[in-house]
Image (cartoon, rainbow, N blue to C red; front, side, top):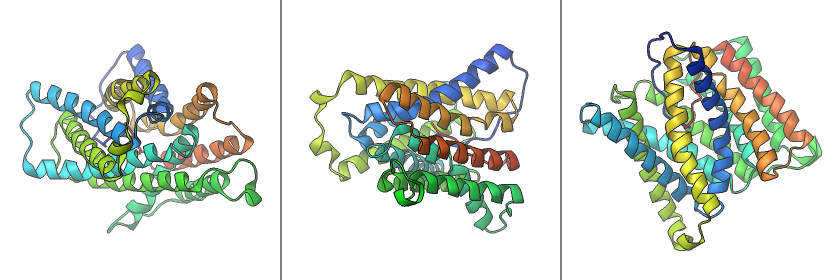
Length: 314
């Protein structure tokens, strides 16, 4: 997950570059759920996420300042800290913690429901937009998909998903949606890389503090960290937070927003297939059916309100 930004003005771009950028956003962002699972095998979840975002944030902040971005004000730091808390501590942190209990593909499916919260929160705010009939249909379909995925065995049968982990992801999507809405009007820096770097620095710091508060430091054994987990963390920093996000921001300037938003329902499919192929995560009929229902719901909502949905990730 990553912070929302205003789309740059569309400009002409080579087809090869556009295709490469879409491939990065589709595949890399879809693979980050599995990378998270591998990383937290031997690294505590909040500490891992904290290191990931502090590292990526330091790079983005340093690059933007070196390119001449002005020094941020205290007011901008406060705003980006709030966004970082909602998006990265609550949003990404909730997903990372939940992947101790649920498969990475299931986490990605539940995260795909985030546009549902965006619609509801935007509707409930003063002067908010009332959802259309297609959006309401998408909301109902998304709820049905969640029930199918985590509901009682007696209702849907076969391989019930851990409700605690699923609940943590649903809560994470709520905080992500709230942070996205706040970020639209928050007094953040105009420079995209500077703003996102500040959000990552603040969110990463809060994630590390949360890890300390929950006792992760006491149980963490650096010598026990495997190369598998370390490589996964490096992948999340370089590919998930730097390359894919940069590709995403670039795409916003060269492609229609509705087309770029298709990642929201491609990522879960990629995550489910990678989890099955590389981590032996079960690909049951229940998960497949829920995948179709949830992705269908996101398609309806995104198509009905493509300019307003902000379901982005790092």
